[in-house]
Image 1 (cartoon, helix red, strand yellow):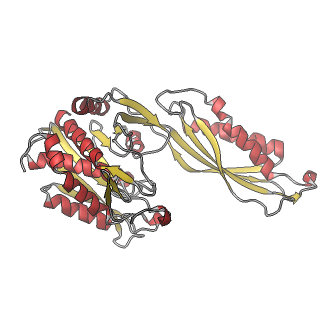
Image 2 (cartoon, rainbow, N blue to C red):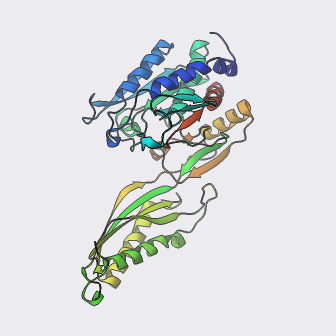
Image 3 (tube, rainbow, N blue to C red):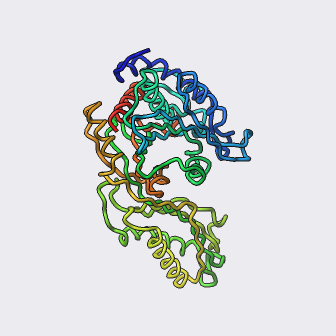
Length: 407
C-alpha cells in the first residue's frame, strides 16, 4: 500500500485496526492483583503483529515479577527513525487491562469483540487499546510510505499501568535511561468525546487510614470509657474542614478547589449498646498542586493531636496512597505542538485542563519531563460492556500522524 495522505491511509486500514483490537482483546492481560497472569502473552502477540507489519526496530524491556508464570512483566519500545533526534516524540499506551467485574452485567463475552453501530465492545477496547492501536497505525503510516517524521518517534507499550506502574514505567525509569528532558511525551489514555481537552496537571492525591483507639464500655456509661467513634467523627469533620484552610482555587480543575472527603469506614462493634474502643475511617483528599503534601500532613497531624487531647484517645494514621507532581506548563512544547496538530488536522481548539485522578503522567512530571494526556473517547474505562468508537481510533491516529509530521 502506498498512500501518502494520512487520512486516506488510515481510513483504508479500518478493518486492520478492528482486527488488531480483536486480537488484543482475545488475550487477557490482567495483573496478579486482579487475579491475572500479567501481560506476557498479549505483549508477545503485539510484538509479532508489529514485526509482521514492517516494524523492525523493537526493544523489549522485562521487569522481574515472580508472581506471574513467565516471571516478567514486559514492555515494548518501537522506534521510527526521524529526520532529527535531538529530542524524541513518545506515545505511551499500556498493555494491561482491568478484570471484567460482574460478568452478569456484560451483554457479551468480554474477551470477544462485538461490533455494533460503529462500536467495538469488549474489555480493554478503549482502556487502553484505542490509544495503542491509534499509535501503532499512526506509526505504520510512516513505515508503509517510507516517510521520515520530523523527529524520531518512539511508541512505548507498557505493562502494569492499572495497578500503580511499579512493574511498568516506574521500573523502566529507574533502570533504563529511556527519556531526555527535552522529549515530547503524549499519553493517549484520557480525554473527552470531542478530543479537545489536553490534561496537563493532576491534583495531589492523599489517602488517609485513621485508627482511633479509646476505651470500650457499655452504652449507658460513656463516662467510664472513651468513645472512639465519637472522636473519629469529630476528627473526620475537622479533616474535611481543611478545605477552608487550603482554600485556593484553580480553574484548570473541576472542582476548582482542594477536596478532603471521608469515605470508607471499618466495622467497629457488633451491638448498638456498646461504645466502641476502636474506630477506623478513611479519607480521600485531592489537593491542588500549589500545596505540598508535607504542609497538608503537618495540619493533619496537628488535628489528630487536638482530638486526642479533647477525647482522651490515641490516634494513629497512615497513607495508603500519596502522590504529588508538578504541572506541565501550557507553554511546554508537547502541549503546544499537540494543540497545533489538533487545530490543523481537525480544526479543534484545544482546552487545557487538570484532573483529580492520577495517571502515569505524574511519574514523568516528577522526573522533570513534560507529559500530556489526551484522547478522543467516551470514557468507558473499567465499565461493563466497555466500548470504543472505530471512528475515534481513526481520528486519533490521524491526529498522531499530524503530530509526528509537525513536531
